[in-house]
Length: 587
Image (tube, rainbow, N blue to C red; front, side, top):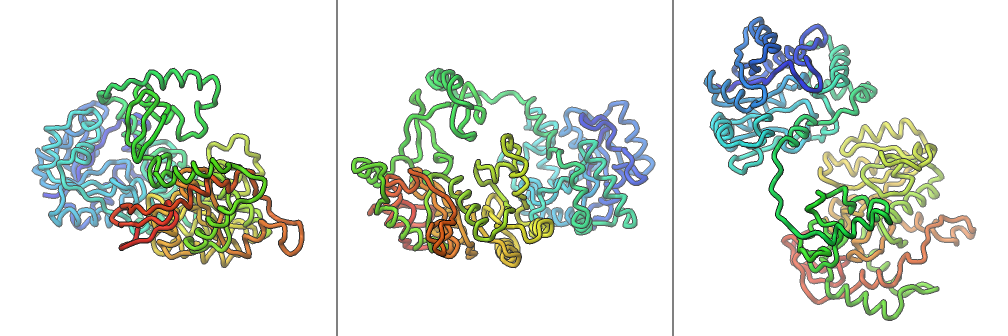
C-alpha cells in the first residue's frame, strides 16, 4: 500500500495549536487532507500523532473524518512514523506535515511517479529547493524507513525522520525540480505571520475550495504581491536548524592554533572584525579549532601561522584561479616589482592587458581598470547612469560594498536613505519581478546589473529576456562577472550562455589574485570615462593611482608553456587564466 502519513501534534514550539487552527472555516489539517485526497496515487491517509493528552483532539479529528490514526513518541518522530507504517502495512510512505496547507496534488503525484519507477529508495523536492517551501513531499520505501529506524542515532535524525536517509549514503536518492525556480516563496505555516498569510490566500481563493493549484497561487501573488510581505521575515526550516543544536558535537581533530589566537587577540584591539573583509572574519569559522591567520600557500594548499596544512577550497575567496604561487605568474610579478610598482605615467602593460581582454570578452571594445570587484561594478553603474541620464539601478545578486549596492542589504548602516532608494532588487529567473521594477520606475532605470548565474542556472531564456526588457526600456544591461569571469568559459558567462551585455565587471581573477579588476564594454559607453567625450570636460570619474598598476598587469599577462588541466579540458596556457588555447571541449 502507498499511503500518506501526516505527522501531526498540537504542541508546536513556535505556533502551538496550529494543526487545528481555523483557516477559511476549516482546520488547517483538514485543508491538507482534502488536497492529498485529490492525488491519483495515494491510497490512504494516516495521522501519526503523539501519546500526549493534548493530542487527543487530533485523534477525535481523525475519527470524525474516518481516518486511520496511530500514536507514538513526541520526541522520536522517526519511531512514530515507523510504527504507524508498520502497524498499517504501508509499503511506500508519502511523508507530509500539517504545516503545508497549500500542498499541490499534481506536484505530489509527480514525485510519487518518479519514486514508483523503482530506481530510487527516496524521492523528494526538498534536497534542492526549487518549489515553494510548503509544497514539501518525501516518498520512501518502508525498507529504507526501517533501516533508518534501526541505525539513526542523532537527536535531529530521530526528530525529523529523514535526515539519516538523505545523508548516510546508504540509499538511492532523487530530487524532483520545478521547471521555474520558485524557492523564494514561503508557504509553510510555522509562525503567526505564516498563518495570517494562509488565511489571506484562502480568503481570496475561497470560490475554488481546495481545488486551487500552484498556478493559481502564483497568479494570485502576481496580482497581489503585497500578500508576500505578511510573512517575509519567516525562516525556512527554522525548526530543523534549531534541532541540530541538540546533537552532540562532532569530535574535533586537535590542531595547534595557539599563534593564530595570540594574533587574534592583538587584532581585536587594532582591526575592526580582526580583518579587512567579512568573509575572512573569525565570526565565519568555528572558534577554538579553526585557524584565524594563514601564512602561505602553494597550489591548492595553504598553511596557517601555526604550520597546519589545509586544502584551500575557497582559493583566496575566488581569484586564485591557477593556485597559490603559480610559477610564471609569481615570476612575472617579481620581475615587474624590480622594475617598478607605480609610475607617474601609464605603463605599456595596461595596453597589452587591454588587448587581451578585448580579444577574449565578447562585450569588450574598451577596458578601464580598478583594483577589486567593487571598483568594477561601481564603475559600471556610474558610467551607465552618465550614459543614460537616469539614476535608478535594478540589481540581482551580490555586487560589493559600495553605497549604491550595499544599501539594498541588511548591512546598510551609514548609507543615506536617498541613496538606498535608488537601487531596487529583482529575483533571479523571475522576469515578472524585473517588469515590476520598470513599471514602478518608468523612464528612470539606468541599468540592470546582475550576476549571470549562481547556484541555479537561468531557465526559459531568462538572461535573454532580461537583456531584451532592459533595452526595450532604455536601460543598459550589465553583467557582474566577478565570480563567473574566465571560469564558465574563457570569455565568461556571456561567452558560455551566448548573451552579450553592454558592460561587464571582472575582478581579481584577471591577475590570479593580484589587485586588478576591469570594466569592459561598448566603445560608445566606455568613452564617457574619457575627458575627450564630445570635446568637453564633462566625463565620468573612475580613477585610482594603483588602478592598472604594472605588477597586477604583469601577473595577468604572464606567459607559460605549461599545460594545465581545467575540469576535463587540457589547456595550453598562453596567459595566466586570461587567454587559453584549448585542445578540446568547452570549460
